[in-house]
Image 1 (cartoon, rainbow, N blue to C red):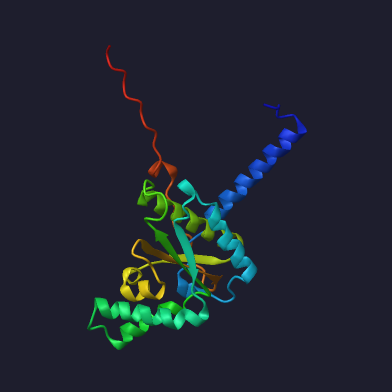
Image 2: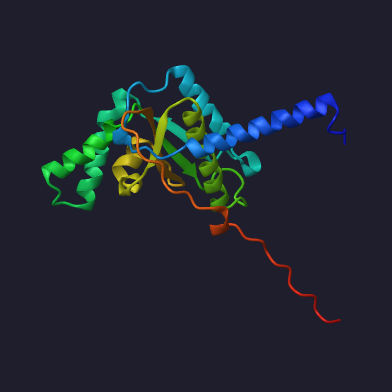
Length: 215
């Protein structure tokens, strides 16, 4: 290993420290901003391309690409609104007009709306569903961090409508595919207080080696 007083080594170390500091700041800056707090302007086409490209760097055992992203543009929001309303009616035949209107309204929140879809059976059958979900989760986190880096707020939204027949039909999902969540991205129009984050000692531990057995 080159000594630290070597100029090239020192520069690389300093660069690494700067990258680590930036990464820490970026992760600490990311927070969930509800869709009702996200408004225009949304990401430009170039900015959205950068955000989406970040997903490609997620871990992907076997290079299955078991997830995909589907944007819901403004022209398709009414169709999504109807899918939300139909899904509610399927769950509750007595849903009021006001409740149906609230369900429809959710389709029009946030300038950018992406559906995350996971395929639990594509490619190598030996790669379990849990690994595919982890890959999708990492891809989503990359999206959120890139959106944060570009100055936008973001949130994940889900709900019972994701597994409904109207929504699955709208997005043409195969039987092996699961709608995981929506990613909402836009400009923060109503900031919120940062939430408490757990300290590492709340979730980090070290496996203790078992005592040696008597021979």
